Image (cartoon, rainbow, N blue to C red; front, side, top):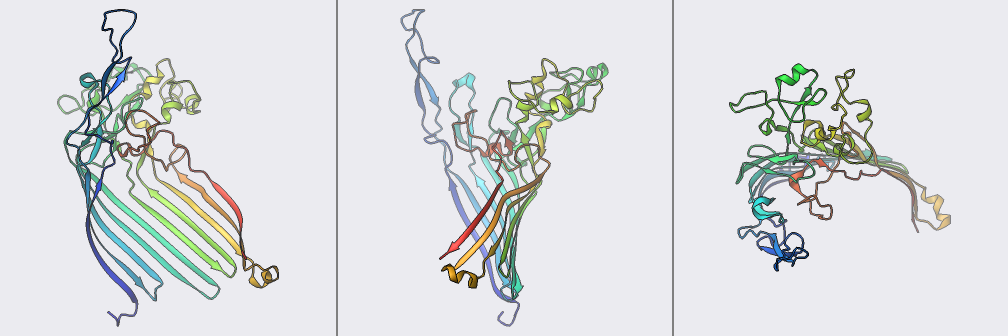
Length: 420
């Protein structure tokens, strides 16, 4: 290809590899016990004024636990074109993960309250595209670099041992449910289908926590597979998932004489977020501040197209089940980095024995455009296991649930770079 002048370099790639993952509970194969004076204490001598400490199960070991494995196949190419001004890196990949690790909650009526048991639950597949484009151009005093980084993947749960597996349990039932044929950690619950506006509406549908001004859940299925006018757990359905349609990063840097400029823009398109913080701010649950929606957007006879149910003594029950009210758009556009600087001409600095002096201003997370009403659409995952903030292990089974993450700060920096 030496006679093709516009190609400077071209590499075709094919790869395959298997990676193991042991990110689960340590010593998960071991059954352990713990002394517990309160849960396992018993008055051996028959007295009613004291008891002797006993032991109970702390964890039920799984002797069959093993690492999960991810087998990845990828094809792609690296190319440099047009006198090294344009570079392209493209990867198409398929990653199948088998023996998925999942920390299963055992039935407390059978074994008591014990630690989650690590289990190999099944498999899942990711298919995706990663594309990076970089262009360098300019002439004389003006030079610039432009980069675009595009990523797209599709996730699907394959065969699993149970009909489904869930995410972490909080004060209400888990929002995440993974089943065969759908993306992992999809959101699952009741779809809000308006309000009970009249007694006639109440007569048509039977559900818990019903009343004039309360949410009416969508009647999806009954014993015969058709709507039957009775809302049961079988009427729950999938309400979205945390996986984006695609992500795109745009990087731009330029210089003109002694001025320099750079910016990085990040775009996440699609995907949903469960705004769990609304459990605390929009319902009569615990003491604390409430969002102004409670005052201005709760149902009243004069405000029938509200967002929240009528305020009454049982208002807290409305938010104690996974419902579509919590699910919000998770896409956003964020300017993650922006900087502009000026370098003092060298002939001005020679008298001061300074080789280089640059004055700059830099901003991080300068703005974010999003429909998400929480503090930050860029969230982390919930801790694993029981509702325990002290456990730092992240839980991929609770993807997309915002339990109250601290927002990304906006930082503006003024500075000098001096070289002697």
